[in-house]
Length: 548
Image (cartoon, rainbow, N blue to C red; front, side, top):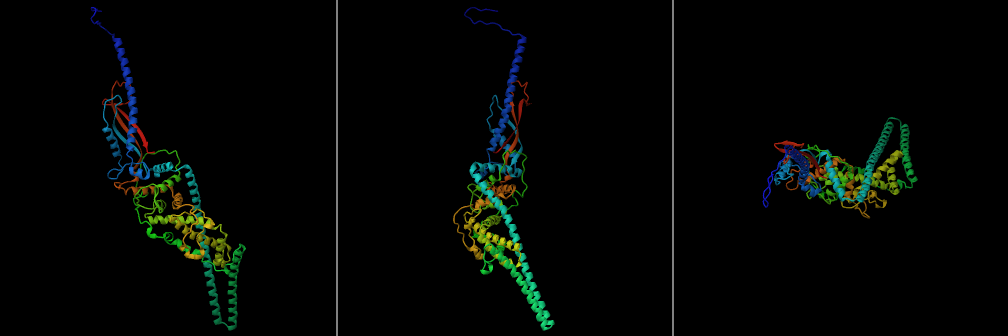
């Protein structure tokens, strides 16, 4: 070792053994390889996170008209030609990646390719994703206690609709009974005419005395038949007296309402319940291209749903966002292809008038069942109906026939009341599911002029027209209801500027995508497990994203 003089810088020669140099090389290689391996692992997580962020960014381009009008989030998969084009969405993701600033960094990574492998559309699985969003939306707006109250009302209405089917069966039996009695009367009349003709012929051929005798016998026979019929009528009248009623022969009875009510049920129903038919909407749509009738696009991505979707929530959503004869909902689109959207969900016809007619027909049946429950609590009306039935078919002497006609008269009277009820509902009033006896409006003694009498509601209690429509919506099959609801939205959105090619089966609810990202190597990659091509690390990522 050399030593220089004091005051000057001292230097010395150094050396290292070959073994130590190799050892340091191995140690440093290991350190930098571990560092690169850690970096690669971080880059792999960054690549997966990067794909998730890019999907979320793409989902931020949700279809604005659907959100603004119906509070639903879907990604529009339409291209300029109105076709479902997923490659356009892939191009948007890649374009955003290319616009990002490229800088060198420890964790610098870039997107090389992205491909959408699976996708879910609004119409998939019979509109499952549409139902999910509708139910989720209305749950946020409707308080739980209010939902319980609605459930109870709809439950009562559903029971009443079931009763309406029983009432229709009773009406059918009553009509058959009345027809049977009519045929019996005609047969008896023909039999009487035949006996008279035979007596006259025998009088011309035989001796006068014998003819007179046989004529007397014919008269006796006819008188006996009349007495028999009269006895049956008296028996029916006696039955009426046993229940505390006056004999029908002691006073004039109203016209049997079964005859003209049968004609009403066969006539155009809107003429009975709409005071001004010119105010009925004339809008129409074509169902050739409806969701139920056309060949739809179908996705291939499924999603498990843990929560049970109740039909109640879907109905409340439609009630909020759809219009009807009673007016528009609190939400919904400002443009309407049909004015009666809830009625379309019930009837599924091309025109507003047809859908309104379908809804009114079913409303009349529900109200008939409710009014029949009320009239069965009124002993006076039942007594009058029995007297009218005895007057109509009492000559048959068949008590079950008389009872069946009595039920028919009560049902006809209930139907008269139902027409007044539906008129009141369409005018914006309310009608309870089951009326009190004191709330009865129609008068059977007025006959067909009973409908000319205006309704005088004592108080506004009960359900309005929209609430009755909710009861009708309960009976529509859920899959059918969902398709019709999407039809309404699709037709309305198409009326907006630039949305002429809008299709619900092009609305994307979720996607599953795969991406390939690349990054430069920085240190020794001796112990990394990723793909390497042309000196670049390649990272494969897979992720799913759904609108919630």
